[in-house]
Amino acid sequence: MNYEKKFRILPYSIYFHYFLIIILVFQTFVNGKNDQTKSVIDIIDDEKPVFDINFGKHKKYSIDDCIPLAFGDFNADKVIDIFCRNTKGYMIRVMLNDDRSPTSKEQFRINITGIIYDALAADFNGDSKLDLFVLYKKESDQIGYNGGIFWGDRVKLNALQPLDYLFESIPTTLDANGDSYVELLGMVSTDGATFKPACVYLKNATRSPIEVLPNIDRLRPSSTQGSVDLNHDLIADLFLTIETDNKIKYRIHELPITKLTLIKEYDPPPGVAIYHLSVFADIDADGELEHILPVCMDTSCSQSRIYVRDDNAWHQLPIQFGNGIRFPLRDEFPSPFKQIPISIKIADYNLDGYPDMVTVMNDSESGTTISIVLLNQPCEGDIKSPCTYNRTFIPQTHEKFVLAATNTTLAAFFDILENGYPDLLVVQKDENETFKLTAFQNSIVQDVHFIKVMVLSSSMCTTCSSQKKLPYGNNQPGQSIKMETITIMNGIKDYTIQLAAVQMSQAGQLTLELPYVIIGLGSTPNFVEKITVGVPPNRDSNKLYRTYTQMIPNSQIVVIPIPLMNPEKWHSKLFLTPSRMILHTGIALGVTLVVLAGVLAILQYREKVEDDRERKVQAQAFHYDAL
Image (tube, rainbow, N blue to C red; front, side, top):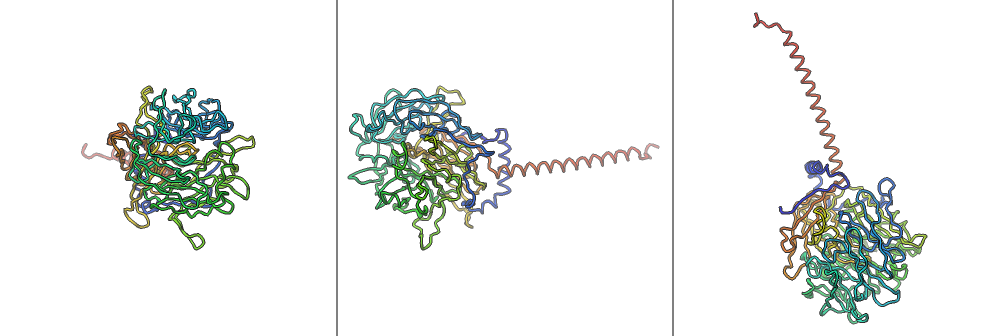
């Protein structure tokens, strides 16, 4: 193989990695046959909360006066950090996380003149260092948002560099031309009055040209625009929410941006009063991404629904939220959340292979907002609640720690300890009228497995040391990922499982998508047959993808697409995270070796004693040959 492999033990010492490889082989030999007969779906105990307020020995993770606007590896230490806005909105703080303990420390803070509403983290100028684009207003009643960039150097953010034009609403990030440079897509105005759909190019730190998109109707404000593979060819497409004749249309165009061939157009579900942000996930684990749309069927949001588009048709997910549980209205949130539409967050927190959800909802009985965790389950309908889709999402009413966090304005998944288990972040307004970020640890007790995939850019840091040259921290949008593995499921041999995912399909509007993908494997500890990674196309090639085979479970594969136009020579690194089963197997193997060593020592000692006895007998014997 042409790609490089390294092992990183989290959070254990790197000196044990060879020992863990031996354990993995031993574990596969001992448990392989039995584990293959297990279903990939390993449902957690419904009575025990998965998310705990404590991390380990009564340690808690929280950040005061923090609204998370973006995630990214700011200092390139392979640990994802958080960009916070303070409650008053004039300050950005860079909070560095530690994968060995649930702590976060402030690396840098910077103020601006105005109110910050959102931020997007990416390497915009291709120097392999994470930058931050912010949307702000100089006056609260001004039309549109100002935009500016904090150029980063992995230690600090430089002074704000304002742009010369306005944004009608919060843009998103995408790789428009497939060159690993990140651009902005949104409604842009150069004269302060007329807004047009355009791409903003930021690769030149001193000049930021825009390109107006031809034959594109008005992008609907406060809606989803993104880059995601929706025609199932592992190549990112451009997803747009269009507003034409006061009607909403969803359009899928072929990338790169210079091509923009229309692939498909379709309408939203009928009878919708309020549209929230779309999200994309393979919720039925068929190897194809679905378009998921939360909506309200009336202006009071008393009828809250989540639709999924599959097989060219909309299906209402058969979810029973409960009495008085609904999506909040935007004016029920404090600023800045009332300026931003509601979004649901996706992650497979129980690692069974089916992505789950978390969303903020209003509890009419208590009059407060809470975070609701929705577990992905097979639909088993009845007369009162027939199945309208093959999957449903069950509100986890036993998550007592999460439900106790009232006055919630935001909830998102985040792997704090970088161990492959998605934790939960919740933002609350406290008694001091400031926003506090609190984390809940994923304390799932089953020994489940995962594959974590991160796709970086093709830009290298030319001014960094040899250890820091790799582009960690480059949040690359629109990367396509597909996993295939073979197991025995429900008595069926050679059962092929396919799971699709997308890395950062959209950014901004507090969607808080992570710069990596975690794919659950359930209780199957077998090697993953295939992981295919695709990057956005460019004008020279639309088949920029590569397949990696025989991947170790509970590992993270980091793909560096260099050289970009030759996927067979792309670099990759493999980091191994030991699971509980591996540790238990290691203990069993260690005890077995100790017992065997003890038995061998006893046998050797007995043999030595016997040899000494025979030697003494021979020494005392009368030798007739000597006569």
